[in-house]
Length: 231
Figure 1 (cartoon, rainbow, N blue to C red):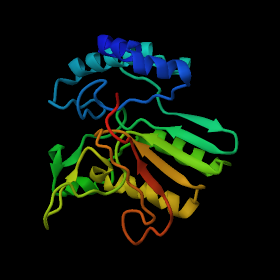
Figure 2 (tube, one colour; figure 1 turned 90 degrees about the vertical axis):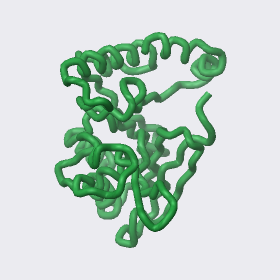
Figure 3 (cartoon, rainbow, N blue to C red; figure 1 turned 30 degrees about the vertical axis):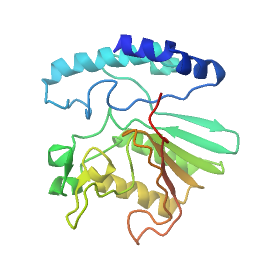
Figure 4 (cartoon, rainbow, N blue to C red; figure 1 turned 135 degrees about the horizontal axis):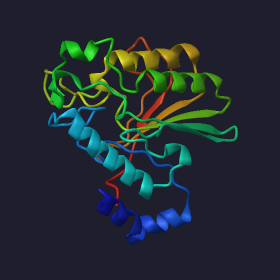
């Protein structure tokens, strides 16, 4: 992991970008393990062994990324979610959808909807981070409110044909948690919410004015992501 981060920040293009502008960084899964969820690894490794792997990965991430001192790792924990305010223009809420989430339902991967998708106990952000986000949005005085996070909030059927299947690693696998967030947008109406994500590297730009279904009749610019793969 350390070697990978070192190569990433020393090769010419990323290094020049670091020198030219400030970076606001956030991780996804591959800094630790594909599709990991909190203490759950992709291959269901023993919790104690995976905690050591996660701690080492978090340490390497902190040592090579431009993070605040408040993000110094403590064992297998790292405080990554944090706010950035740009005057009255925008608040950027950088979220962590890996460290505190519950395990993916339906056995992960792309699946038809199973009962676990609608589990009211399931969480993408964890209760503390979710309250922090909603309180911050509620108090935000800026014209735009941006959520920088890792996985797609929008519903996306992943296969062709009449049967519907969804990625259980995305917000599609956490329907109740997503509904809480969208209900908050609809009722509390933070100014101009925008979500950003990077996960698949698939060059997708997705926008909508009606979120999830016809019950949510408010404007949200959603899941504006990268165009093409990262360098």
